[in-house]
Length: 241
Ligand code: CDP
Picture 1: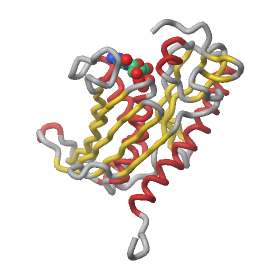
Picture 2: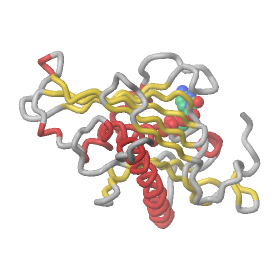
Picture 3: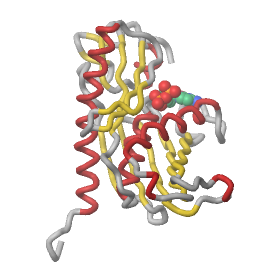
Picture 4: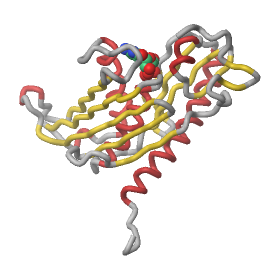
């Protein structure tokens, strides 16, 4: 794709959004029968599934830890998820994203409750349009709750960034590619704790503060949608419904 001349025209982004507007978001909890917990997230053109297994006994046993469970994350992109076919299997990018995803989620779990165990999270990106690591974290948090695993809170995640000298919420692939800065953030909403913060590009201190504030506001919307998805799955419905 060629570089567009401008990413913001008359205050609107190329997909018609305002700078502080998120793409349409859809979250569904409990979509996979064979996983202990699962969730499906659509954010604009992104389509991401998360599946959780465990806590269960860790095998091989030499990876067990006597005092705590181990959280394992695997972020994977389907070959058909991107414009140019992605070669199957792990690569540097997916190893990095798996690691930061694990670190973003660990603070809300009580891993010390499950010595010698493992909790596995599989994130499968079916369609990508920038923001897949954050959509994966959002999905994984709902999948962990759906698995009935005790949690301090959910984790909500979205990217912010800078395009055409403007701070914007939730970048598309075009904006990520041709913009100045991409900053994925994950937040533990109730404690207002940041559990993921990466930056590709640069921002002044003042821009950084505005971007982080926007990420908090975006995550609040995501948090509400996550809670709604869990309520829809678990609300006790009156008889006959
Ligand atoms: O997806 P996320 O924004 O978290 O990560 P990224 O590394 O900043 O990638 C941005 C986007 O580039 C992805 O969401 C994909 O749409 C695209 N991409 C791709 O087309 N081919 C790849 N092998 C990797 C990423």
